[in-house]
Image 1 (cartoon, rainbow, N blue to C red):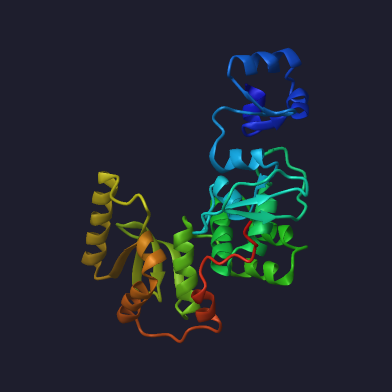
Image 2: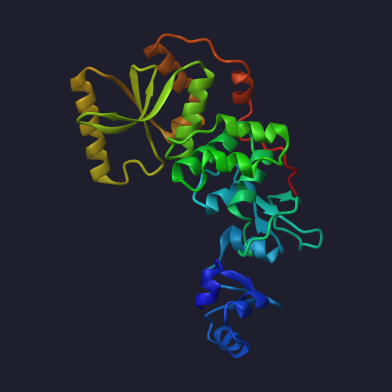
Length: 289
């Protein structure tokens, strides 16, 4: 049903009626298996599943990093489902982080708006994750810096301040983490640097070391593997220092990665509070259900 698809795969009877669906059309769609009547007044697409379906079943909406992932942004490493729940919401599934703040009006029944997603990330996620979400949102063009500040203007000062650390340039959350950690260590980081004969390189550190971050799907594409080897060869021929690391190394072996970078470049003193921020990656201030 087109009306249900346009609403993201879940809708109330009122929403579908306002979109032009008639009661006979709804009855026929349910009978034919085109849509599913989840409970009185709520319909979902048979294709709706996972966290989105859990949210609708619980009478809530995806929020924070779970909603962020649904918008194609960084979702951090917290794999629990974050739900905005009303006081009369149904019992949520296990491994849920509850959010209670009121949200703005939004047509999609299964997730909060992008603006409310960014607000909840600013309040709930750890510093690195929040900035990475903002970085990927800025890079994707779904929000501007001024727009981000406007969205967060009514939030607590600690939440608003996180927008000051965000900037466009990270194609992935992992790239943002690398950028943040290097800058916290006093390094100068340029992102998406154009190198003649090579193209765009993820980062240049202190103007000397070219850094490439391979995603989770690295090596799954033979052409991509060959292309990256050619890029490395051109950098080598230019006499440029280079380092290629994986997303897994960033997330699981950062101390080793940082040591390699430090060995390749002059040591810079870390900025204030950088170690404290690094000591608790992925921690959430929300209370788990």
